[in-house]
Image (cartoon, rainbow, N blue to C red):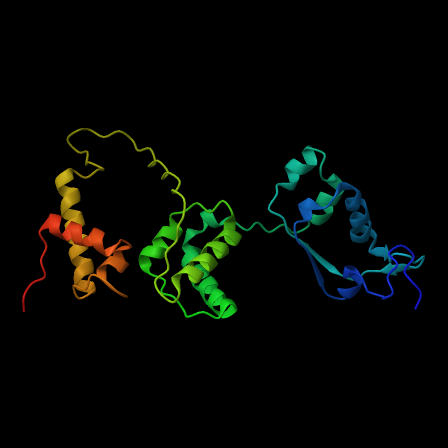
Length: 249
C-alpha cells in the first residue's frame, strides 16, 4: 500500500463521517471548532458530501449529527468566532440541559452513580455516602458542572478507603434572598426569624432526634456524629453544652 498523499500514512483509515455512515456522530465541544474548519463542516452538513484526504472522489454522508457545547453560540456568532450559517444549520432541534446548580435534586442519584463507577474503576472497597455528605454536595454551586461532581467524588472515594465519604468543597454561594411580600399590618404579621432561645430549642430537638436514630452511638458508621456530618469531638462538646445524657435503662 502506498503512503498517504499528505500524512505519509501506510494505513487506509476511514474518517469519522465514514465510520458513522448510517448512524449518529456526536460533535462534542462544537463551539471550540476553529473558524477555518467550520466552513468544511458546514459543507458536509449542508450538501452531505465530503472528500477523504488525498482523494478526488466525493463521497456522500448519511449521518445524523448531534452537536454539544457549554458555550453560548449566539454570543460567539455576535463576536465573530462562530459562523452564523453553521449555527442555524446546527440549531434545528436545540435541547438545553440545565447546569447542575439548577437541578440539585438530581445530585443524590448522580452521586450514587459516580460512587459506584469510581469503586468499579478503582477496584476499592465501597465507601458510605451519608445524608450529611449529600447535603454538602447539594449546597455547593458546581461551577464545573457534572464533570466537577465526578472528580470530587472520585477523589473522596480514594481518600475514604472504604470508610465515610467526606467532601472538601469551597464555601457555598450565598442563599437567594426571600421573595418580596406585600406589607402586613403589625397586628397580623408573623416573624420570619427565630430568636436565640428558639434556635437553641430547635438544635436540641434535632440533636436528640439524631441520637435516638443512632441508638445514642456517637462514633462509627451510622453514629450520630456521622449522621450530622460533624466530628465526634464536636458532637460531644455540644452534648456537654446542652446537658444531654443518655437515659438509663
